Amino acid sequence: MTEAPHIQSIVIAGGGTAGWMAAAALRQGLPSSISITLVESEAIGIVGVGEATIPQIRLFNAVVGLDEDAFIRATQATFKLGIEFSGWSGPGSRYLHAFGPLGRPLGMTGFHQYWLAARAGGEAGSLWDYSLTAQAAARGRFARTFPAPPGPGLPAGLAHAFHFDAALFAAHLRAVCELRGVVRQEGVIRAVRQDAASGAITALTLEGGRDIVGDFFIDCTGFRSLLLGGALGAAFEDWSHWLPCDRALAVPSGSERPLKPYTMAMAHDAGWQWRIPLQHRTGNGLVYASAFLDDDTAAQRLLANLPGPALADPRPLRFTTGRRREAWRANCVALGLAAGFMEPLESTSIHLIQSGVQRLIDLFPAPGATGHAERAAYNRLTEREYVRIRDFLILHYWANARHGEAFWDARRVLDPPGTLAEKIALFEEGGRVLREEEELFTEPGWVQVFVGQGIEPARASTLAHIITPQQRAGYLADLARITARAVEALPAHEAFIARHCAAPAV
Ligand SMILES: Cc1cc2nc3c(=O)[nH]c(=O)nc-3n(C[C@H](O)[C@H](O)[C@H](O)COP(=O)(O)OP(=O)(O)OC[C@H]3O[C@@H](n4cnc5c(N)ncnc54)[C@H](O)[C@@H]3O)c2cc1C
Image (cartoon, protein in one colour):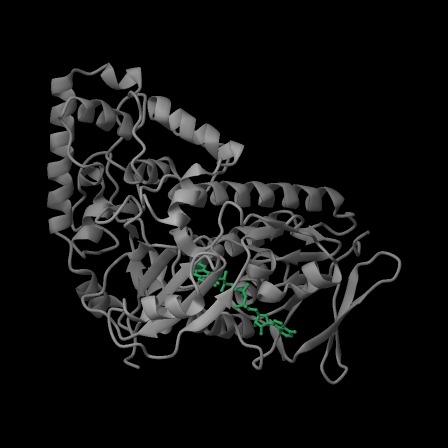
């Protein structure tokens, strides 16, 4: 298959989060001479459940020129400082995967190594005592920056992301895109036309017979994957033996006050439940494995564990965890659910849209290029990114301590993929965190999940013993004090929103 040598028009199929994020980023990142058309169908609608993000979304918003407060008001958003995992290490267990750094850099090894060494001597508090973000989350506080800098080597503000209403986010982006010249076409795609010789897509035929022609196509048609999976036949790599949850039920409930600045991920006997605080409502959902829990029981379980009255009937969603082996085939790249799906345990799907479109802009074939090298690089980098996120998700399940529940017992005895097994071994042996190239999750992220899930390193790095136990204990005690003092000076999350970015009442 060969590509059109000179791309002058792009057609995006689908107008969910993926379609409109792609339109906004491509419009900013590619020459204005390239036309962008987006086709979507109101009759089909969007999946509309992607509501929790990670801090990289702020970069996306900045690149496409969204004002943060205006975006928050338009999408009924709240601030997110991390994810609270409860019940993953057995009943009553709880830990936070907080964004941002742990502690403060000292010497030649990571902060957590000093903490591990001190803990072995009984001189350390909880790992999260040394995280500004975790402490702010636990106390329900938020501000972008501290009123006074907390101290040398500590961040001046809180690493944060957002919870937002997915339908409002797509609408907000659509308004921005249309102002910038993206053309929206309403209609149901009935056929994908291809060049007989090369296999490249030439047009999308809408209901009624109208053709939308283009040189390059972005498949954002959601789980249907009409272009990449359907017309171009890109194979799907199934990861459900590692991540067997295959269903979700989503239901909104009344807004829970005070607004928490973090996502909740509560383990249950065959999966987990999310709770996402928005200004106008709370997003809830149950992710479960149908081999271990039937749909009726799942619905009862979800409805019995809402923070307020349900505002609708639970909406069922079915999925298979995995990815298209080639995210770019011929003259088509898939983004969002059309490219693959991993459950929203670490809120990574919207990020994968962002990084996918960023990569596409970086590798966009120049006039006259065949695009072969760009496509190969795109597919290789995309695979790596998916695999590393997959491994991080598997760790949460593999390292569970929910003994006596069939679903969880089966997760613990499964061999993790080799890439994850290596990471686990390195952490168990010496608290080391192996990160390669541009891996998404940071060292503090891995450490929090390892420790939170109960993985105990045999020893700390010898580098952490360069200072005396007294120095270590003094350093940690100072840090905990500074952290608590800095967080105490922050306003309540809800008060910050009320002051800067309260959304209109619904
Ligand atoms: C249960 C669940 C929870 C999730 N939670 C999170 C989360 O917390 N954080 C996160 O980052 N991600 C989350 N995600 C993922 C997130 O929802 C998606 O990544 C995001 O919404 C992007 O979806 P999409 O745009 O690819 O697909 P969709 O929203 O399904 O959009 C598909 C688009 O294609 C159009 N379309 C389809 N077929 C046709 C056709 N024949 N003709 C014309 N138009 C067509 C539709 O009209 C629609 O506009 C979650 C996903 C699920 C399933």
